[in-house]
Length: 439
Image (cartoon, rainbow, N blue to C red; front, top):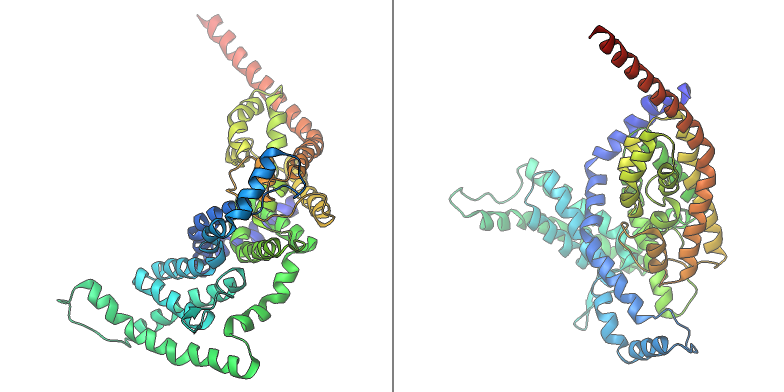
């Protein structure tokens, strides 16, 4: 355990700290967070277009829903197409805005230039119509590249004092507009010709080339080893007191959304859903109740004979139901607690393995919809898969399994705390008796 603490303190923690404060990773993470409301709403509306009922259902409600979705399919899909269907537009704008803000650049002009650049290379116009092939999930990695490239180019030109400089008497908005002219020209003279070259020689757009470069990573990200590695790193970071989910989630966000786009496209085409590792899978199967899958532990705390643990259980049970477990992490504490290390890291790994296997075998449904991570796990798991109740049943089963995993370590920790509490009571009683005798 001392070796583990030394590794976490001397090796893992410094790396995690640098990643957490790295401006580009932060811009990507905050960019995806900024675009999240559009994607959650769009995903929610997708469920209305594809009811969770078979065409031969005998349910009156199901038949009515199926009939409504068939009659108004285009109208129901329009909000989805204008949110999830073009999510790369929101993502590139938000990433560029956040990166420009970290550099103290003009945020809105830089974000708008990034949007123009993305459309220039990813959505060429033909016959008055913009191509939408790369506006959705397949354009995510291009959105990340452009969202970083444009602010970096703008910063470089500003540092080299290359641009149009207007007097201070000119209004700020006008000055900002003119400051953008040179970066816009440089982009048109660099990245646009590159796009035309790739199109002419390889019969693909630049986003297609970028997607081809990332394809091995995308394929690997949806494998069980990748899920277990991401889970292990997140849990080790949390055990060291660092917000592991934030760091790992920031890195995995583009893969989550790309995989979600694959599933949604397959659902619309009536094909089998290919992807498993998407954010709701993580939130509602792997880390039930928060990092460490601690909802089961909170249930154990509620019945504890230790005053301390029972108090933490009462305080933490409602937040844990909504996947918020900081009261348990720091109140128990679980952070740097050697007794709880094995279940804290092991329970999410077991959850991930079982959930992956059952999803792969189609025993439970694949994720087709983004769901707020604060949704209670059984509801969120069913909602994310188009209200497939098998997913909710699996969540309950995993909680029961987590109870078994945590129980022996909980009893050891409880016994230790009870001994300490009794010693404190005895010490307090001794002091009280001494004070009474003196009186």
